[in-house]
Length: 131
Image 1 (spheres, helix red, strand yellow):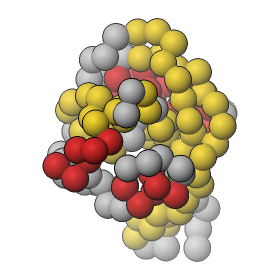
Image 2: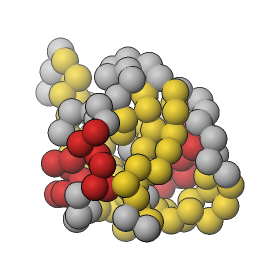
Image 3: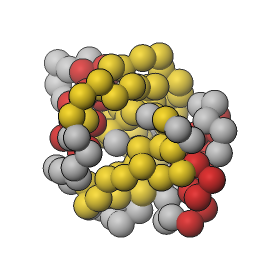
Image 4: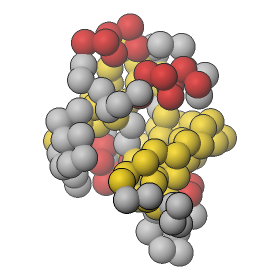
């Protein structure tokens, strides 16, 4: 395998709802997932989470504990090494931006009504989210 492509995302849950974005670009365009993305050179995982959440949702967050690390193949022996962190909203207003087609709070009990990225519910449960 080659070097992983580092990525980081935020798991933000409040009032039995989770903050998700709808992917505006491939892969899995149109599906709902956690706000996050590739880590820029020289950027820490936590800095990446703060930047990505702000760009995709308009929210400022406090990044907390890492809940999950996973490897997702992207073809040709390459893979994403994704680090999912708990995060808490500390400012801003919800507005979809950057490569997010939409952003919204989705009740955990209604996740099955949305086209989610592959295995998202499995990963959320593995991270300790009750969905």
